[in-house]
Amino acid sequence: MSNTTLFTPYTVGDISLANRIVMAPLTRNRAAAGFVPGPFAAQYYAQRASAGLVIAEATQISQQGQGYQDTPGIYTPEQVAGWRTVTDAVHQAGGKIVLQLWHVGRVSHVDLQPEGGAPVAPSAIRAEAKTFVNGGFFDTSTPRALALDELPGIVADFRKAAANAIAAGFDGVEVHGANGYLLDQFAKDGANIRTDAYGGSVENRARLMLEVTAAVIAEVGAGRTGIRLSPTTPANGITCSDPQTQFNYIVAELEKLGLAYIHVIEGATGGPRDVAPFDFDALRQAFSRTYIANNNYDLALANERLAAGKADLFAFGRPFIANPDLVARLQSGAPLAELNPATLYGGGAEGYTDYPTAA
Image (cartoon, rainbow, N blue to C red; front, side, top):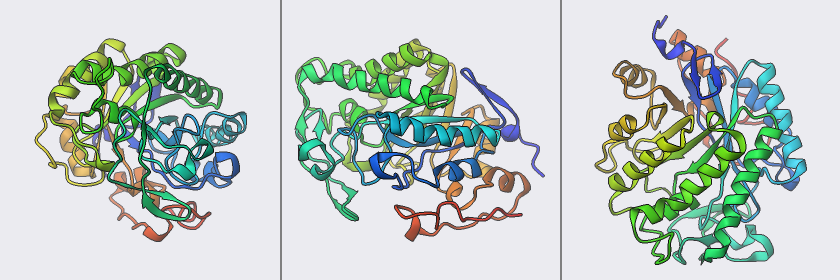
């Protein structure tokens, strides 16, 4: 039986957690009509409520923000009501849950956009990536560059989505600033070749991410706001010529905003941790509050990094899919079940709520 402090309580911002294990957001493409969380979502999340913190799947802040088939939203009353059934179930099971707020930017397809329009992006550069639409994986559509006067509307959509999340019963929100989606696209010069106040310099490219985070904090409070970052991931065709300088600046500015946590993908999302040279400890040292570490962590690595003071909380993603009792399995040393890749995206209860516990 492990005595590590990974299994001891921790407080992140205004949220008290039972342990230091985080369920990372996992896209499962099971939303019902109207992009409302599906009929099994409450059961799925409640089964995993033993995580110290559950970060619910990335959820679009508007129809324009959608990039994949059957992902949920948080911009209509019906979606808010649907999410309320999820948060109620998690809270009844003793858990804490926050919602990840998502605008995919260019990682979308015309068939998902309002009136079949082009996806939006900082610049009209197509992502070298595929998206899940019309029952299969297809190339993303070429985006159009957002006009300067459209950007306040993006910020307002994030702020409204944060308010809706709290109305739906979430304990907080996480701004999705990672994985080659809209805010990450603005931050990285491989996707942003603008020449206005939102392009060019390190400061300008960080501007939209910081404005969104400040607006969300103004709406729901710093103690209930986090952000996800991925400085070096190549996910969705994103590139950055100097990620260290860019993200050292971003985290220093986030520190000033006082938000509860930064959730950092160390390396390539779901892939190698050493995909590019980067000093993640510099981000840890620049941010005085909670640092959530993510990417291919197991119990041994999490214990090692926790003991060294390299992170406070540790996010586990795919292991939670097939192991609803992941915390108990890690604590007891029980073997982990393997997920069925055929049921990852779309469908119903199979491969979603039917994975058994070790008991």
